[in-house]
Every structure is written in C-alpha cells, then in structure tokens.
Length: 383
Image (cartoon, rainbow, N blue to C red):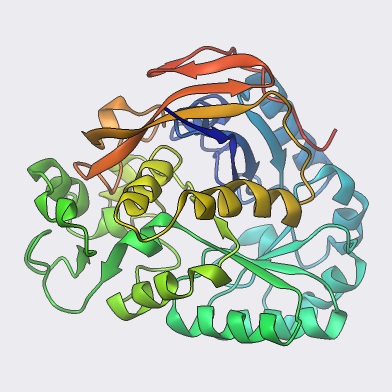
C-alpha cells in the first residue's frame, strides 16, 4: 500500500449555487475524497457568479453545511468589482479572471478592465487566469508590468507551454497547471478509428492498455449527437501539443482536474456545455502513467500537494494522508463514482492504482468505496 499526502485540487467547479442538479458541495467533495483529494479550491462561475460579499457568503454557507473535505472559494473578477474583490482577498482561494470564454458579471471585454484588478488585488494572493494562446501572452505581460504572480489555468498547447517556459527563464512570476484530459486525450481532423467515423476526437498515448477500451467508452465518447460529450474548454488539442506538455512536465507546476460536471442530457443536447468530471479519475490516470515510466511518484506529490500549497499559500493538513493500492488494476466506470453527473470521458479505460483509504485531520474519511464523514466535516482553510 502506497501512502501519500492528501492531494489538493486547485481547480474544481462544484455547481453550487445554481446548478445542483449536476453537482453540489456534498457530491463534489465526496468525489474528491474518493479520488484522494483532501482539499479543493472551488471556481466562481456559478449561478449567480461569486463576485461580491453577498454571493461569496452564499457559496461559503453551502460549503459549510455540505463539504466533506477541506476547501476554499475563489472570487471572480468583473468589470467593476476590483475594490470589493480586494477587500475579500484574505477569505478567498484567489482571484479568478476569465480572459476567454466567459459571461455575465465576470465578462472582461477588454484589457483596460484588467488594470484595476492587477493594481488592487493583494500580492500575497495569486491571480488565476483562464487565458488561452494570445490572451495568455497578454496576461504574462501584465504579470511582468505589475511584478506580480499569475497562475495560468489548464494549459493545453505547445505554444503555451513554451512561452511559459521562456517567461520563467526571464524571472516573470508565472505558474501553470495542466488537466488530465489535455495530457491523455487528443483532437484530430481525421476520423477516429476508436470512437467512430466523423467524431473528430481520439484518445491515444503510448500505453497499450488504452488501446483496449470497451464499447461503453465508445458510447461515452460519442454521445447521442456525436461530439457533445467531448466538448471542453480549452478544447482538446493535437498529439503534437500533448507531446509538448509531457516533454515539458518540469515547467508545469500543478495537476488540476478542472472538474466541470454536466449531465448526460446536457452533453447530448443541441448546445452541449463544455466540461468533464475529473476528481475521481486524475490520480489513477497519473499512477498508470507512473507505471509506464512517464512520470514519478515525486512528480505527483510535487504537483498535487507541495506546489499548490505554496502557490496558493494554503495551510498544512495535520494527520492527513491517503493510501493507494498502486498495483490494483481495473476499468474506470462512472457507475462506481460519486459525482452526480453520472458519466466520465474515461469510461472503460484500464488503469493501475486505486485509492483505498483517506484520513483527513485524524479521521477516516473514505475507505474502499464508502464515504465515512458527514456533510460539513470539511473546513474552510481561509478561516
């Protein structure tokens, strides 16, 4: 049995308030424990979004009542809430700026709206940006101009990782994270021989076990209309991009799930929302990659415990650890998971490494498929 520190996920969407039909603080933090995570940082693009004192307290009230693992809540940057966000900084996980793909109160239409946040948000806490390609370049420029740390969410492209590497070499205060779907799934313009004619997405890697996926995974990937269940932002990239991420793993600071659950009905609709569940699949995917000599156990600890704690100034969790059967082989099955959304893009994948036990602050929180702590046991780490 492999004993590891409790993992930290710096990027989860728990859908509360506003969309609890697909996840809430109870089911999401149960999924976290089952995946080996003892702390999660929750994103602010809920309904309503978390961008002021009132909405922040709505989220924290729900978390206090329901969370089963430890947590912190992000604040969202909007066009006119820089002072309010700065005043709440010591209670928040960090400030999240959506520079691509956003809506409503969190929409930042031009770079002049970024300025007050970079000027006013306390430098003791990072600014996390959803920024892709050219907007990411602009965010790095802002980091250099204001001499403050930014953390770039879910990088996916070769050009992104190479630019971040260059920025770090110049001493710019930038860190980044990568998600499992951008490490293990690829997009292609040609039809997929695995997931069906015309789907336009395939999963591939050097692992021979992943070439043996089941019919259930084919259906999970295809969905009723074809591509809906593979919609995600940033989009799945090319094999060249995936290879660049693996080749520059030392540049990547954190593994993050970007756990973004939607129901199958939503994913199979005419307008499928982007996002995948991920809390219960990240660790087994990484452990399988470890068995394939693509990374080490030290890489997992560094990028899932040590670096997130340092980047986000998070407290230690005393008497907290997880136990993993690193040789257990099994297929990923959504039917065995705790997330409310009821599906996974990795359905049927053969993996090696299963979480058996989680101890959180001296109490057994999870063992062999059972959650053993009540809703509300999780603590707000910013209190």
